[in-house]
Each structure stands twice: as C-alpha cells, then as structure tokens.
Image 1 (cartoon, rainbow, N blue to C red):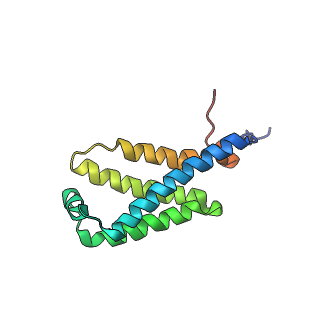
Image 2 (tube, rainbow, N blue to C red):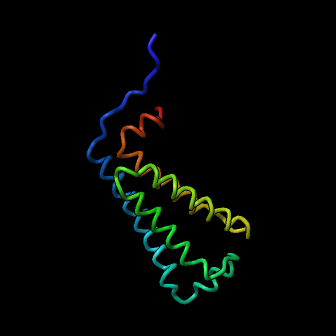
Image 3 (tube, rainbow, N blue to C red):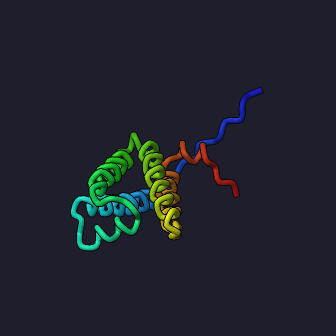
Length: 132
C-alpha cells in the first residue's frame, strides 16, 4: 500500500502574478514600516509611548522588521521569511492586545504574507491544500 502523497498542481501565470503582487505589497508595507522606525517622523515618540515601548527600541525593531522582510523577498527563503514575519506580527498583536486595541489588521497581514506565497508556490499548496 502506497502512502497518500498530495498531488502537486501546476500554477497558472495569473495566479503566480497575483501572488507576486500580494507579496510585493506586503513587503512594501513592511519596508515602509521598518524604515519609519529609523526616520522617526513626528508622532513616533507618542506612538511608542502609547504602546509602552521605549523610543530607543525603535531602531532595533526596524532592524528586525527589515531583516525579516529581506529574507521574505529572497525566493529560496520565502517560507522562512513568512515564518519570521508571522512571528513579528504575533509580537505586534500581543503589544496591541495588551493595551486593548484591535488586531484585525495584523491578522489580515499574516494571512496575506502566507497567501502570496501559497498562490505562487505549488509545494506549499500541496502542504496546505484547500479543498473545494
């Protein structure tokens, strides 16, 4: 008796491009957000104080966010980058939940991080099949 091996399907060009666009938009968001932690525009100090995070930690959070995003953008390391960005978003969710703020945006971002890869990577589709 042979083990049940998921069937790897061919992905259409439209699906691949949709995944690339989603991943590109997500990466652009994280690059912008990480860069702002270095630039520290007006209001950053108040925002960090509201979250209970010292402003001195902004630079390190920016380094972390940009590093995870760069890893996510390297095709060979998409999945590792997605895992790292999901962990980063988990920390952001906890930070916002701790002060009673909603985390809908963070959940949507995490879904899009993985959705962009799932649309263009047949091996991930085989691992996480969506049945009709």
